[in-house]
Image (cartoon, rainbow, N blue to C red; front, top):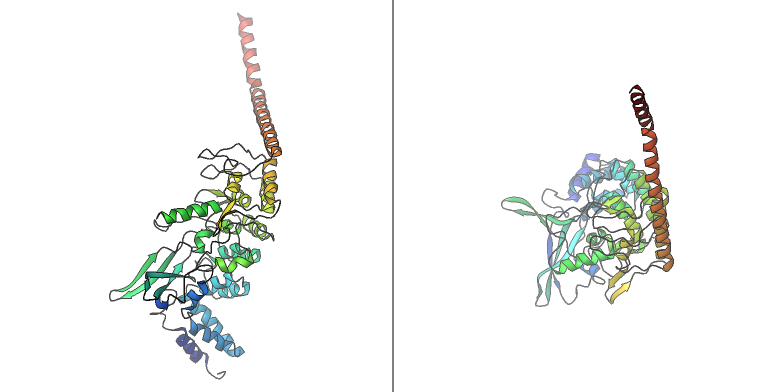
Length: 446
């Protein structure tokens, strides 16, 4: 095919790409009939079977890329065309898919061909059953396109990729792109034309767990789900989670596939400790790039809250020592960093409630660091609870150190007040002296 003119090759690529005016897998809802016996819905085990029921989307594009790989001439002609086709008709999926795979070369190529670096993720599908759930041994399985409030930078941060995060910031991605509850979205084509349908994600969708700052918040959300009070039901409200929020709860490599799936298996805590230093590396990139330390608008969550909840000692040291963060800073509900530690103690696995397995010594180290910088163990949140009453354990030495720091702070405040009074008196001394001299002259004249 090397002798073919580029125009003919591009026509072939267009044909392989399909009629995007009428078909686009990222816009289409699909339903198939399957055997209930063969596919029982168990999120931990059967998700791949559920997904594999459907044909893979964009086979034509895959064929075009395969054709491009056969020789240099075809590659140089087809590769730019497929990138531009994807950016124009498939919501820049090449950018998001590359970011989710840590493929910085793919990200660079997509941006080079004109992708909007701030594009939100529409590359995932929601797979669920549809009633009736059983019908003569058959089951209806639905695949719906989704709109996730996740950009390439958010995915890079959630995967702990500091190099990619830095590149995206340098490429124009701002830190004002805030994550929130996504939705399902698909286009209906009827006699009256096209209409866009929006709906709620399945309750176990991983993106919902991504937005929770602690295990307790996730369990509270799931409890409200069971009561029919979904947090994302009213207008698909924006949570306002910044890239730094996702960086401070980035996932380990072994759990990446679970977070990118269509179901959160619920057999892992939603917040765990970082064991490889990635969170600190990404946090530095974002903060040095101007990120606010308020990482989530909903609840006014602070970076020190997240770092403490995860028992990330290196991040806590960075925030306290280098940035001078107040350990007693509170969220909207009056919770301090110690309260957030108490909210991330237990995990409801299928077998029941168990304590989250943090690396040995991490919890006590974080408590000691917070106290050394003045954390007050007796502070209560808006519901009147201290961190200890919520389940966080302190040693006698912790209480001794906390009271000592409290006395030291009180003495420092008193010294500051005395110094201020002294400065005020010194400032007024010339006025007082002048008044006395004037008064003395009046008395002398009399």
